[in-house]
Length: 496
Image 1 (spheres, helix red, strand yellow):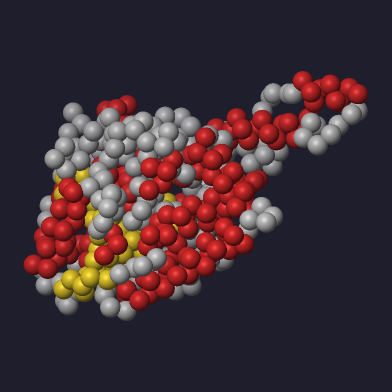
Image 2 (cartoon, helix red, strand yellow):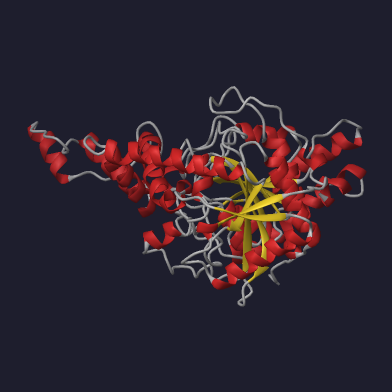
């Protein structure tokens, strides 16, 4: 990354770079609303400390004083971690998430906390309890979700790098809609310790930046085994930044037949196919592959994810964690006076009910109810167990495909960014927006979105690359190969 090279060479100071991005945030974020919280003084104190160490000749980490924005679901010691929810509006974490600790160890300047769909549940960033983030390319449109704040911050050049999380496309979809680069690593490649969980078998933290080189740098910092996370993979982290410029001779690309059918916008189709032709001009060969269980991915995901959300969010009851309602039911007060309690009428039960109904937004409550129903007695085998069986079939589809090709290539989203409010009252339409991304989370593989064009309305279009587990090196090299031959990733929205 250019900034890191300038910082390392002493051509720029961390204070200068940080101040430049703070100035952009001050100017641009009132219209974009990518950040939930920015503390300019704290950011500059971090930058000053790094500059002092550089001046003293002390060794610095890979990020060398570069600002990084962090999605507001990663715990940071002493700082609010809200998950864009009223439930955690006043929660302050007593510890650092592993990813945050690694960013600090790499001498990043934590410039701000980015907005998101509440508890990472949503595909448009409209489910934030505080305000929706707007797409920098067209403020009347969504930036995608749930990492919409991180994507918008990078697209608006208010942060050079950002951290997001991806449970069903939450890095890749906003990266595509905002015209930036975003990578969902293999499940377990990056520690989830300190990540406020949505669906524990699907969640994965990943990097967002303008280029594949940016993502390689940030992934090299945050990846690695962590004994605090039992799902963390105990394998050495490759030097992504060193291998990314190596050529990929004989690259075999797989085009999934099922991803180019009904519902795909013609302009997205054209942009993706043109990107495939670019790869062919660079020497890649293209092979059609079939994933027969792809049509079940959305249904499978929207059983497994809500079931895990129902379990993970049970802790937010107004007693152990989170918002506590001040409301009291008249019937509970009357029952207390007479001592005639019955199920559901005690002050404690009423406090639980009111705290959760007031603290959670509609989408979170919808998913909790879906998951609780699917896990209930008499339905577990019919829904959750069956979904796990289909999940295995989806993984087998990927295994067969990667036996024939190195990377899969296709669309990220069915359409470019849609209007704010257009789908908020239609959950099914919103869920179907994840059609091409959820399967990577179900299978635990790596996936990436890179800019590959624009619609006739000037909206970014993303190209999805998918790789076998732990093949991020190949994924990043494949993305960089495309970006060296095109300039889509260099385009900036006009925010003045």
